[in-house]
Amino acid sequence: MLPILHQSYWRDEVASVLLAQKSLSDIFTLTLKGVHPPLFYYFLHFWMKLFGNYEYVTRVLPFLFHFLLVLVVFFLLLHLLKNWRPSLLGSAAILINPFLISYAFELRAYSMFAFFTVTALLFFLKRKYIISSIFLALMLFTHNFAFLFFIPFIVYWAIQAVKINGKERLKEGIKLFFLPLAVFGFWLSFLWNQWVKVASGFWLENSTSSIFVEAFRKYAMGTVDYPSKGMLYNISLVLLFLTFGFWLMEIIKVNLKELVAKHREALFTVSLMFFPFLVTYLVSWFWIPIYHERYLIPVLPLFIVFIVYSLYKFSKIKTSLMVLVLSFGVAYLLFGWQASEEILRKTTKPPINYAVHQVLFQAQKEDVIIPRDILNFLETKFYVERSGKTIPVFLYYPEGEIPFYLGYGVVIEDKEIIRELPTDKRIWYIESNGGYSLEDISL
Image (cartoon, rainbow, N blue to C red):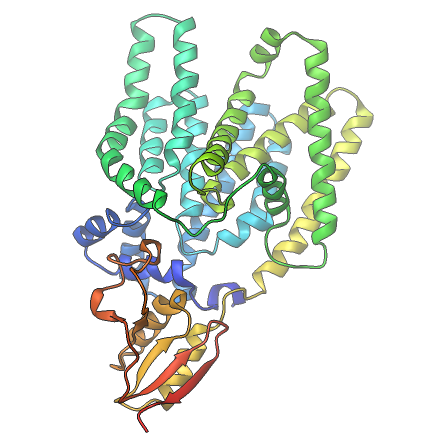
């Protein structure tokens, strides 16, 4: 099988597994103490009930949502362009995008989040408001950044409602927003408490306007090294410049009112991807760092949809432009395919599972296991528990309170934390690079 499926869990993935193994009521209660809503953990809970908690099994779940995202993007582009050919090329770009394919096998809610967001947009534009409402509600119950994507829906609909008065428009608004607003209202107090925790101190670094450039670089190339990385980035830049060229021509040709009327749905897609990005940048600049590319992962498929829309419209102007756009588009797909192959055959997580297996093979009953880095505690704990061995695993943290984002109070219990090293036992250390060592301080 593909190495990406079999590689060791890393701490956030293990947190997902440990939380999803609990009862449905415990999942809900414990997520209130964490930083994400519980929907993904419910999906994972039933998935593991059916198929188990092994890496190659659980990582299929987020990939299924990635595949569904590809299908939804096809129908979204078909709605916008009324042409299946560019729609097929655009959905292929989603399938092989290096950033998306990496997170398609990450046991977190990212692929699900992107799928719900884009699906809500599709049915919103098709005026299937009840279905869109359901997916908006699911989106809000999947990730705490989802409300940033929800706000543009409300603003866009309100602007349109001002132009078109009447009871029918009011009924549409109730269909569209009643369910997601009910979910948001129910979750709001918990969401606020979670954001207060984040404000007290988070692991992210301060952000500057360079995140816009850095985000494009990561979204275009991914975060894994492979031979065609530079070429794929250059082609992505060319496609971006061609997109800018099209919109510059449109601005020159028509006035603002005509431009909005002509490309209303595409411009709403722009707002849906730009607003969350802008808000997280401003919050990270003036308040507390919250920006990370993966937290805003729905931005990327929306960005690709916008570029495909723009390039298709651009190619309709002249035959020579069509050849140019098609050439770079095909080149992107070819290099993207090569990148995906490389990513699927790489392991990027440290082999904590191997280290734990080796330690358990050699350890004695009275020994203890301690990860050298507290960030590796959850992986160590999980692999020891899954082995069925009873050798205790401790998180050694002599100073202060455990940071909440490590899972303290959610999947880390007080009894698992020690402030002093045991002096009467052999200690096996799990290294952060997947190695291990023995320290016998009982002598």
